[in-house]
Amino acid sequence: MLRMFLLLALCFPALAQAEEVVLGLSQKRVQITTNFDGSEILIFGAVKRDGPAPSGAPLEVIVAVEGPSTALTVRRKERRYGIWINVDAVEVDAAPAFYAVATSVPFADAITKTEDLRYSVSIPRAVRSVGAPMNVKDAQGFASAVIRIRENSGLYQLHENSVTLTDQTLFETRVALPANLTEGDYKARIFLTRSGKVVSEYETLIDVHKVGLERFLFNLSRQQPLIYGLLSLAIAIAAGWLASAAFRIFQRN
Amino acid sequence: MQIYLPIAEVSVNAFLLLGLGGMVGVLSGMFGVGGGFLMTPLLFFIGIPPAVAVATGANQIVASSFSGLLAHLKRKTVDLKLGTVLLVGGLVGAAIGMVVFNYLKAMGQVDLLVRLCYVVFLGIIGSLMFIESLNAIRKLAKAGGAPAKRKRDRGVLSKLPFKVRFHTSGLYISIIPPLIIAVLVGILTAIMGVGGGFIMVPAMIYLLGMPTKVVVGTSLFQIIFVTAFTTLLHATTNYTVDMALAVLLLVGGVVGAQIGTRIGLKMKAEQLRILLALLVIVVCGKLALDLLLEPGELYSIGAAGGQ
Image (cartoon, rainbow over all chains, first blue to last red; front, side, top):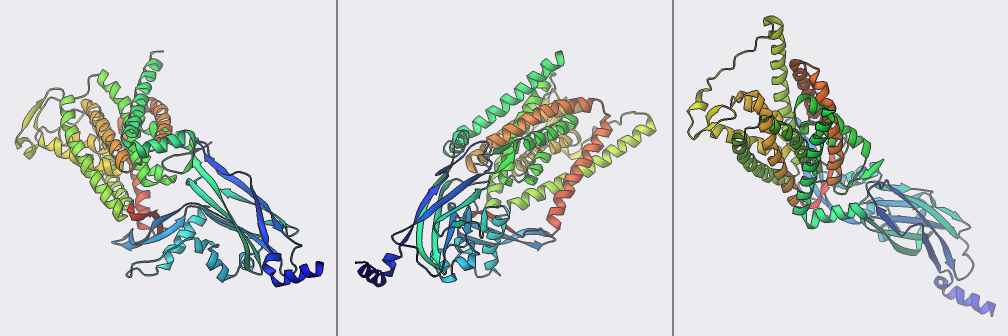
């Protein structure tokens, strides 16, 4: 019986080696409140297997958290008439507002270039730029500028060796979300790789949105801009009147 | 304490904003200007997106000007008739300025325009004020404080048609020059997010010949309406007025203005003017350097389609 099972396992290696992710998140939603100062999400999980862990190349884990993508216009300054002004502009088709990659080994060891291309894991893969106008020199520089600027402001992060993997089964990592976060659905993807090949992929969503006063003000400013504008003015005028009234009382005493 | 600004979508320290509002408030109380020309560049420096800084700056000026106007109305130092003429011109100018602002925003040059406006106008006003107050101090030292007589002859200006009598100001002039000045200041208001007081006040004194005591109140009167109009236009077309930011700046500004007024009362007018002139020149110099020196990061990210 056991022999037959082994034979079967040899015939269908994929079936026997099936390794799946069972995932947990410390929070499924991030609420941007008035005093929001960044947040840290703990992503943890285990590898579920039908049989014993396959021998050979060790298992590696990659965790990628991706914010909502938008199209961008990137502009480059050049010196004209003695001052630095925006000259060339390139449209970047889609760039996520936030992107963090965490790996259990150095990135290059965790996944091969071809697999990265297929699954779009690394930061440069996440920023998609297609057509730059023909007259723009060094169009590639614009996409790298997006990555550089966002890396500097902590919006794009690459953390190598930051996923702890215990006994080839349990893994965990922390992803820090910065304070200047855009709202939307954040996609968390977990890849299991062996010798650079993806053997399993898992995806889940983290809901990031403004709540309370933030939500109310933002919605009001978009849906009822006139009322929002008038309300801003009413507050300004009330504050001005209060100040003058308070000053008068202050002076009388 | 960090505060997440809902429209600017950045998180900033609330005490920093209160302090900023307070500092500008102190200066505006001391010098009798709205302080918008300081506030907007300072907001750039702490990382508020320029479009939000401009729109929210206008909103904040409404509050400080209204507070000031109430005091002037009590003292009857507001020329409502001339103020209304200036107001009509100012609103037309603000509408033109908004069209220019949105057009340049689509071209990605709005940053440049705002900065250029600041450099040019702060430079001119700062140097003129510096020279004028330096001369005043010198004259004071020489003549023992006899005020110079203002020339009543305004040449071409007195020959224009549509003359109207303005009782509070004691003027009988054509409405064309005030209208033109108001349109120009209105354009600047929309582009720079300032009340324009630092341009309007000298223009009213030197070009229109208004008596100094009604100038500030009248200027405040029209600034309130023009900046309120600008705020509404920005709120409805660009969605860039950040109420949370405005409130924090307001609170600081209101408190600071009262402290500033007290400091201002203890100083001589010429000393105050020369300090203000130096301040204006420093802000101008910083902005000019940013344009002239090679920036550390040549690339900038904007939303697609120039919006």
